[in-house]
Image 1: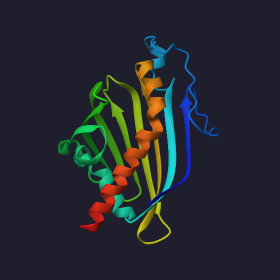
Image 2: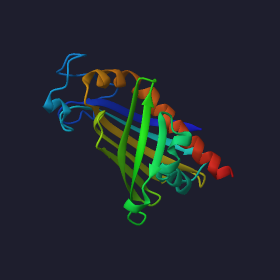
Image 3: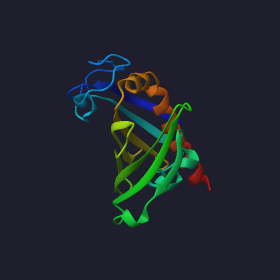
Image 4: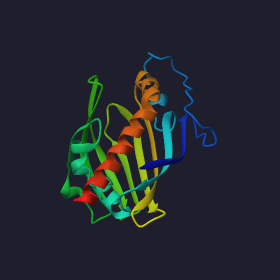
Length: 196
């Protein structure tokens, strides 16, 4: 069972608005207008989401293994259609790279490189480069001990921006549902692996 302890979501126009809750849509471009060069810059616009959850039925170590197992994402993470780690680019247990392919509603398919920084059992941070779809995409998973030996707290955050403002506006409508599906997928995969 996952219990939401708190969540924040905001649109990042220039800087963050962490005191606000809910999704706030603020753009300087029209819905279908092409993105200008400063709208494409990763510091100028984006959507951010933060959530803290208590997860039961799995351990901090198992959840870390699931999140760090990028090679398996295509088997359980919604919207990920292909995931391939590049072992030759890995550095010990703290860094790896992978190519991910994602698809949304049959309308958009995108491949990009995910650069993954890890602190064993406590943190996984990914950042995307070389994407035609995203101007930036960063996610961070912070794991900490839960209230029992078979639980943990997850502090999850994602920040992203699309090069096309139409996608940006569309994504903001579905963001909460997408984050819920992804969190549920990771939680269920960790529980399934723990029960094997």
